[in-house]
Structures are given as structure tokens and as C-alpha cells.
Length: 170
Image (cartoon, rainbow, N blue to C red; front, side, top):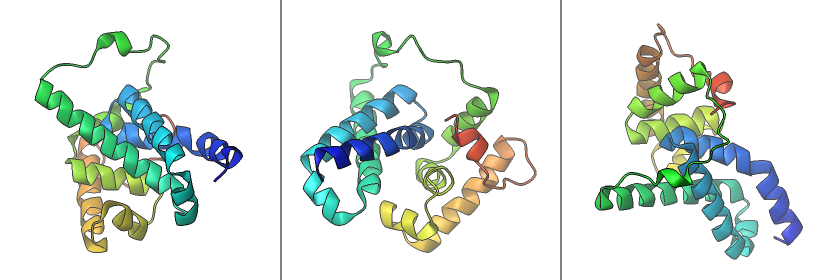
């Protein structure tokens, strides 16, 4: 992968990956930092990424693992994030975005990750299973339970799985 192809990958997938990771972790700053770090690591492994043909999946998985590592460090250090790192240019989130992110936070981590990958990243069940290392049936079960939980949390009789409206703002 040459510099131009890498730049194209960055331009076409940075915002999408950041939104997906934000939906998974619930913190926009963490999501941005983890995705940026994933791209820095991808640059070092660009030959391997070119051969795999799954660069965006590699980036998403790397960013997610970086976020998990950060959570562990924060829990071990028992300190809150540094408020000085919070950007001042953040726009006010919409009510729909807040409701969706709040509802997603209520899901167990494994369900949340599967729901985001399937509905926000628009991956098939098979792709989600491959990326997470879960069986197809487990992914389907997590999706079913996640939809039911989200329906209750969002005050709906049935959650259709249509996260597109909320996802574009996530």
C-alpha cells in the first residue's frame, strides 16, 4: 500500500471508524484517539494490510483493542480522564444521539460491540462473527437480546435495528 492508497483509506474510513468506536465506547475523544493510533500502527503494517484486503476491519479491531487497553489502565490507575484534553469545539449532541449512546451504554459490552458492528458498521452476521471471533449463532443471539434491550431503553415496543438516523450523528 503506497502513501496515496493509505491517504485514500484514511480519508474514506476515519469518520466512519470513529463513529463506530464512539458507539462502542461512549466517549468521542477516546474513539478519535484510538482510531488515530490504529492508523499510526496501520502505516507500519501497510504491506500486510494490502495483502489481507481487510484494512478497515483491521483498523476497527485495533482501535477497539486500544480502547479496551485504555479502560484497563484507567481502572487500574483509578483516575478520571484529564479534562484538559477535552476539545472546546465539540458541538452539542442531538437528543437522538444522546438517547442512542445512553441506551448502548446499558448493553453488556459484548452485545454493544456486536450491535454497533452489525447496525452501524453495516457488517453482515458472518463478518461480525469473523471480526469478533464469535460463532454466527452467538452473534445472532447477541443481536436479538441487544434489540430487545434497546427497544425497552428507547421506549419502543420493538426495536427495528434502524440505527442509521442515530448512527450518522454518533
